[in-house]
View 1 (cartoon, one colour):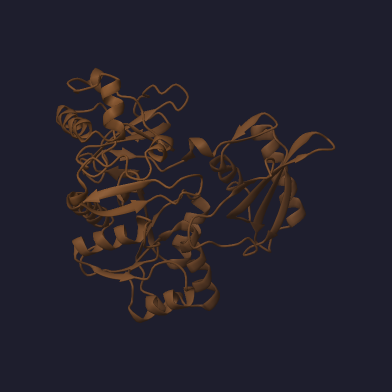
View 2 (cartoon, one colour):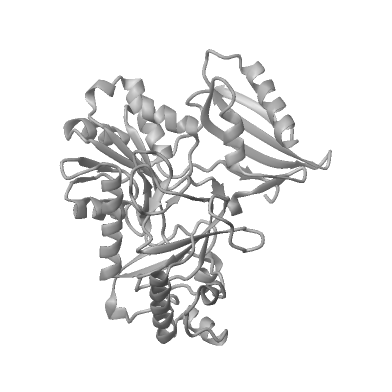
Length: 413
């Protein structure tokens, strides 16, 4: 999508605010001689920023307003290094709630709904974002937070929750528990708002069928606002994102060049009105594409396709680049195999070669040995790598209340 004159004007306002604040990026832009954005060409000259630079500015080096204007901070998990601290002004918090309420409305959720919120609270942006949007919408929030599945199911039945908000991993866990206990007839869920991690079609189908609900992908990341900057509508043709708050471009992750609408690449986001920690051309490493044309639902907001994975999730075995999304796609073609899998990569010192072990779950009706051979053949044929495959019963692999880690690389252990 080409940036509009209105969006350029908003970017210019953010750029001037960043420079005048003399924060980490303000000093960077000044050193580069960047003082104003007047044209599309000017915008494309702005350097990309990424999470590594945000960590360099730890803890509050990206703050662009005085301390007295900051009402809240959030933080990324920090699982792969220093956490990233994101400060918010009162307007940022309100804008985020407005976007989130818009997400609920786009999913057909209204004031009469009872929204059970299972993502985590605290420094993480998830739980509080789901709740603020719910309250802005005027619906009933049931702020459960993560875990305590027994209590989750009790409240779901007693309060007649109509919407469940969760990661796909926890939604799967809840669906399996409801199925196991025969509770489907006792719950009133109609819709699920699922975020935080990509998920396969097979997992989506299972959760939707077992809970009897419509599922909606919500998009967002802590560095921008949090979840709530986009969601799919009932036409299920991609996620509408709010281009009055953010500008999205898609780039080739290798060259950094913009790609045409419809082509897959890495999502880059610019915040248009964010005050506390505005970011210009932030590389998310999420892989998707802008869907060209108008949505059948009639909304004018542009659309992103589902998140295919992350450019930094790639792993290499026998010289072949692979992504978890590829693994999921291949496993999805095998009869009886569930959505849950685990990949272990190690180095065989004696043979001096890497080995890849894929552990998958399968239904009891299929032959596990034959299924393992089918998976090996598909991998060898499609991507040129022959893994070792272990097939286990459904429910064997651990379930998570948050994001599920799929790839374990032991080569550096």
